[in-house]
Every structure is written in C-alpha cells, then in structure tokens.
Length: 518
Image (cartoon, helix red, strand yellow):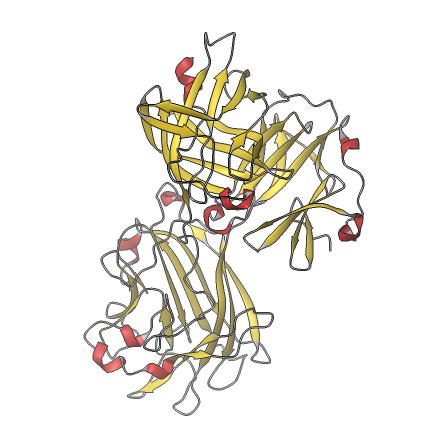
C-alpha cells in the first residue's frame, strides 16, 4: 500500500534563482521524472491550472499508471502561491475514489532533500515544484514524502506554422511555408523561377488582426494550366505531366528541413479563402480549389499518394476538402474535420503535411495566361475541442442549468465517481473535489493546452450549497461588479462575478461551459 501512495503525487525541483511570477506564468503542462522511494519513473507529466479564486492553483497528475494499472487522475485544488512563487496549502483531505474509496491527508512541505538534491514547493517561469506529505493513518505507519522533477512544456508543435502568412518573406516564401522556389526533383530548375505563383498580399480576411495574406495563382506552362501550390513540406517536381502522382507531389520527410514537427490531435482545420477562378464562374464544377492536411507518424509521406496502401501505417488523420468560390468571389471561412484512422489511434503524431492548391485536379482549372486561377489564403489554424457534452455520476447524467451542473443532495468528498463525454478526440477532464467551496470543479482541456493555455471549467453544485453563488443576469455580466480578473495569454480573461465564473474574450462573454451569454 505504501508503494501505491508514493506513486500518486509529485514536486518539481527548482534549482535556478527564483524571480517574481504570477499564477498565469506557471500554469501549463510539465514533463519530468517521478522520484518514489529513491526510484525514478521518467516520462511523467503534471498540469497546473488556475484556481477558482485569486492566487490559487489546481495540481493535476493525469491518468496515472502504476505496475500497468491505471489509478485515474489525481487532482489537488486550492494551492496558494505567494508573490515569490512559493506554494502552500492548508491540510486537506483528498478523496481517492479509484483506490478502494481511500482518503489521504495532504500537506505541502516547503522543501525536501533526497539523494543530495533539494526539492522545493516553488515556481519559476520554466519550472514548478510541489513537495507533498501524504498521510493515511489506518494504512500507513508514517507519512510518505513524494517528489517530481521536470520542466514546463512550452511547445508550438500543436499549431500550424505562421497560419496568417505574416512577417517577412524570404525568397518569396513566408516562414513555415514553401512553393516552387524551394522545389526539388528532376524539373526543379524549371519551376524555381515561378515566383509569381505564391506571393504576399496586403488584403486580409474580414476581422483579421493581421496585415497580410498569401495568394496562389495558376500559370500556363507549355499549354498546361499548372496549379498554384503551397505547402509546409516541400514540392517535388519530376515530370511535365502534372497528373503523374509518382513524379509531382508535396512531401514531408523526417530527414529533410522541409517539414513541420507536430504532436497534437486536433479536431479540425479552419482557414479563410477567397477563390477567384480564371473564368470567374463560381458555379462551374471544374472550379474547385483544394486543401489537404495529413497528420503522420515519424515517416516519409507524400500528397497525392502514389500508392495509398503504402501509407496505411503512416497516415494517422486527414482533413480534406474541395471548395468552390462564393457567388461574389469573396472571402469565406472553411472548417474541415479531421478523420482519424481507428487502426492508428495508439500511434503518436510526429508531423503534419498541409497543402493548398488552386484546383482539385493537377493541371485543372479554368485559368489562362492572362487571367489565372487565384486563391487568397489567411489565418489557417487547428482547432481542438475542449468541452464536455455530458457529465454523469455512477452512470446517471447530471442536469445542467446553463450555469452549472446540479446534484440534489448534500456535498461530500466521497460523492461517487464522475465521468464525462468530451467533444473532441483529445479532450481530457479532471475532477477536483473541493471541500472549501463545497462543490466539484471539472477542468477540461485538449492536446493544445501546453501551447495555447485554453481550458474550460465546469462546476457541480449541490442543493444545500447553491446560496454561495448569487444570481446573475447573463446578458449583462459586466455591470454586476467584477470581483477579480485573471488574464491568460492575452487570449481571454477569467472573471469572478458574485461568486460565478465567466470568460471574457475581447467583447464577448461566455459562461464556464463555453456558451456565449453576451
């Protein structure tokens, strides 16, 4: 039993001089090694989330496995952080519902020395640590001290590179994207001069905060309407026959510098496009531009595929669409879901290959020498769904009133096992039994949390504790009197008003379930 308890909790070692940090500085994902009874367990991860009150954090050790057995996610709410980054918490009882309904008393210690190393309950902008003392008198003869050492994950490998096509263009290519200028293959020297087929534009999609977009154009070469083409991989030009997939394609290769390392499982890819066919006829069936985004393993991949069967073990997911111009040849927002291969769900993503072209058919389209097919592109991004569509306890769904979930009974810290249904393929939910606020908080994230900092927070209220939160008119939240505001990544604000939590993004207001209320 001692070994089971010692595997449950963690503290991140701090060795650098500590500077003043805020709650939002340290929130995120941490990768490192668990130290348990002088044994190291590498490859562990923890999360730090903003708490529900100022200067508090919630600590999460997700989906912990010991000896091949999953012990569930361990969540410790109400951690206080001082201005110099030191963590503390009042002695609290944590309900371990996965482990035979056992409870443990948890304290955070300021520091602990083990094997010549000092572990500290303190945070910097790149590391954070929690030293926990765990006591369970009926099972453990003495308290257990557990440590974890690791670093913050600040990875961009969950997003497309430069999806707004901003910044300076080098050799007629923006950072992260390539076209014919950097092509390889037998005909590379022939196409490298096609600098006019991929250029920067000052025209942006409606509502954009950027200053530029990209423009793809077709080009008549020896009587063939060569498509405009850009990719975050590399173009291979091997034949004058544009339809020959074995000789003309875009590709991603781990051994090449023309690739995009990628670790996420997004639900969709969204982009803005303004498609202007050569004949200016939006209803012509021949006029359809194309997007294809493919998430792959750590292996070579090409689009179009020369032999689909060859890539069955490489292709993890794909988002594909052929789209027509709008009737006024204007901007449109296009959202494309990723379809995941069920046989490859256990494989880790390593790269993403994205291709935009002016026509769905190689060499197709209605462009001419004087009036080519054109596609303006702006603000391409990957979307990760981080909400839940259903919350249940013991197999019974819990009612949601638009503000919080409701249970018709008195709160207790052993009120049963909660389960949820996520809206995305990478959605994770963590349940914080919060005796301080007499409720259960549900933190919901997706794969991109380490990069975006985005999360949703749900609250489960009990009938005898509802009076804690005063009623609020959701149509006018800002006039109710803001108690506190916490800004995260300049993307949104978490606002507590009369005991109820809201999210403010620009001028829009959302409740804790992500539903817009104003």
